[in-house]
Length: 434
Image (tube, rainbow, N blue to C red):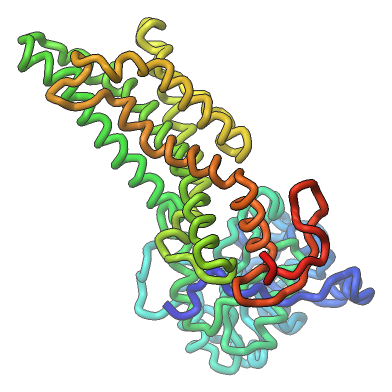
């Protein structure tokens, strides 16, 4: 979809260190806000704390003045429009027409549309495009709709830092980007105003970065649960005429959860291993990864957190079972957020699983319906990841991979400097000698 690429370069914004006049720029600019709702109040607080002069246009200034910071001037909409060239339209789409009587005052102004819809693609055109059609003499910029009122009050550290901006006018877009930058956010250029359709859908998407990891976790859980059900419940019922259906809600689930957590923890590190193989094969870091690998790399954090969640659920389920039944499945998975500790947890879990299942792997009674024990299936991916990681520790591969990630390419003579350590290439050695 046009303008929907989140990887576009950020808008260039002046730096206060390089431009001594930037520090005084906010105080010399007056920002107008049309509307007196929660978002307008939070936005005014953030603008005032960032050094801007703020005027709030309201249909009832006396009633709403107490809701805003004392430094913000709450006046009638017509007066607010006259005092500012940049106006944030904090109104619902249905209320845009109430501004039509002020079209002459709004002529030549920059209108920042911050609205969202109640559902995805609720209208054929975006709210920003609709606002632009009502006021053709104005320049409409879409932005700040992905920032919540809570984030505006708490600051960008407690929420999303990225402000998506789109507009047909580059100067207006840059002006709004400078405001976002002054508020502590990171402006991202999303292209023309047509991209507002995509931007307005973003807040309505349910768990946009979690959909693939959640479906992956559910799929693994279903597979392992079915596998454990066949081995622990169905096999005794058919083979020995024993009714063990009581295991379904607790024990089968408790056997499944650590399997899912273990495999998902290994899936956090598998894409990094595949990326290293890809770079070694092509001898460059500038070749784009395949889309499936690129998506996998971007979802590693969510996969790791879901792995920890499954391990935590397993710990809770273990209280429902005797310790002798639950201790064997415990996973040391508390450190998924840290790459080194997370990989250590993966190694320890693998050693634990191997120690637990070494004798059972050669026991014929463990192969029910000729199906191997569950732990043997969970070992496949983790063992592959650990073996690959150990291979990359070999000097011949680790040095080559480090050079590639420092910019070396096969067939190109590029000089660069690497840290001088024992066993590494000396500073200034040409890449073509590798």
